[in-house]
Image (cartoon, rainbow, N blue to C red; front, side, top):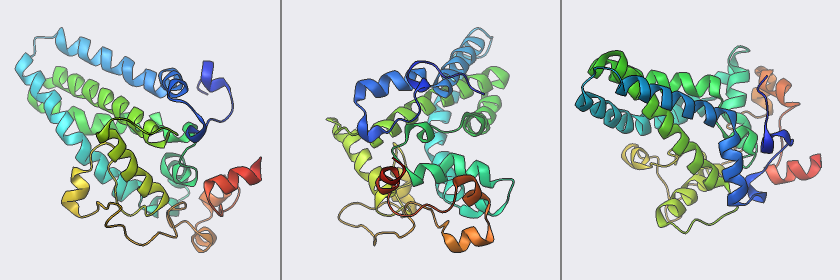
Length: 254
């Protein structure tokens, strides 16, 4: 059981009803963000006090920064949106936590952050091997630290994209527009969070001028009544298959 402090002692928080200041407070009090920052500091301290070449460590950081967007594009598209995870009683609870719940209610801050038990190992798997190849264990630690800092950046941008707030920064406003289309228009595209270059390269980017038809599965990722009848584990954990929009469901539950 993770101890909850400050902001997180309260039960539910929805970004469409929060201010930017409230988000910043919540962000730095969230245990996963704190864990990423601790790992980053420890990784950099170990790497920079070792005898490893600073040039090789810098290459490790650059490689981690370049690999990260591609890795998360692939994870988001083929794993998080592959509802094959719902077809096993072993993986169904993980899929429900790491992405199904987020699409069920995109503004719920409690489930917007990635689950630490899945995200941190994934960051390590993406960032540590290239670091180890370049500079041994100090490089692996430097790569992991860089991956954790990038994850913090991604998580904050992701929160802002769901916040009831219009970014003044043109780039952030564009990111928000593309991500909101992913959640509320058609989930089969715009898989990037902060970087949509891979969407453009692989043909999954769409804008207001090139939108596909509105998806009937944008809130359930294809986990409907028929799928729940055959693979019931997510439905059992969720109290059934949710109907309607997230706002409608929150109104009914109130």
